[in-house]
Length: 200
Image 1: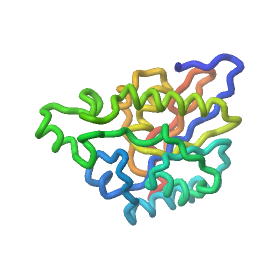
Image 2: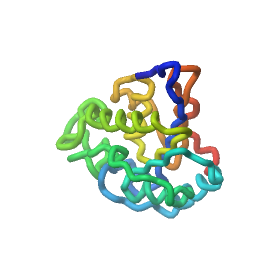
Image 3: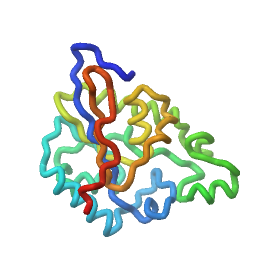
């Protein structure tokens, strides 16, 4: 999974996490609940747009959830973005809206990465969704932008590198962060990670 064949197109993937929400600011697991951006999240998305300055992408995909789609629009790509359900955030089941500390009060030692969320998706199921996204991006004629959520993008990065989806736990992503998955010759690499320097 981590290599390209000699004749394969090699588009870079620009991963953009949505701006801040009330739940992301407080550490609550935010999966399918459609939480809007805070005022700070809107500011972050606009700063992202100024930084990208209309950069051209061959393909722009966004999670259908409003916090990602609105970030995409504020960044200047709403007219060209295609919604992709494969970029939806992890379905957290019983963990939805709860912090890790709250989950551990009921399930000692719990981690979304190791125990999975009761009643939600397994990390392997999210990994299969990100594999489909990667396959789609490899068909693009140039750079690709993906507007989505922290956990799904972390898992996508792990899969890009050929790692198990659970290794997404190794990659932290802040609100409105920008990361680039690229290539060193034919090998898939992380070119840039969790950059928020443009937020001011």
